Amino acid sequence: MAYSTISHWQATEWTDEMETIAREKFVPLIMSVGAQRVQMIRTGELTFTVVTDYADEAAAQNAQARIVEIRAKATDELPMSMTESAAGSVFASG
Image 1 (cartoon, rainbow, N blue to C red):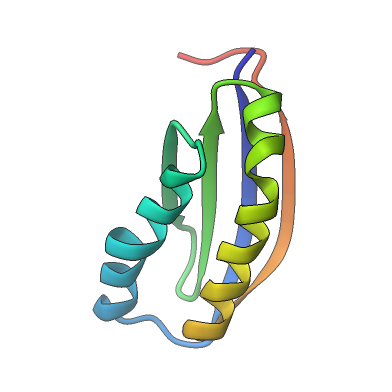
Image 2: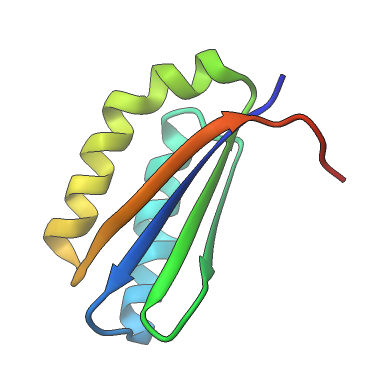
């Protein structure tokens, strides 16, 4: 059964360069640890949500140590912080 993680982020500024870094650096890093899909969704002026999809819970769990490192790298390199996260099995999709 598919499994997804969701993290909510708050930035102190927003630039085109930050979006480029997200697309060119952080999405590939997340994909490299086993994600099947990563979506970074701007939800407000300075907020965004990251939805990461995995084949199953085992794949997500195997990736978590590296995901923690990637999140720390993001907060070190960019003016943002994670405010909340959640994860669970996908029971319906379209």
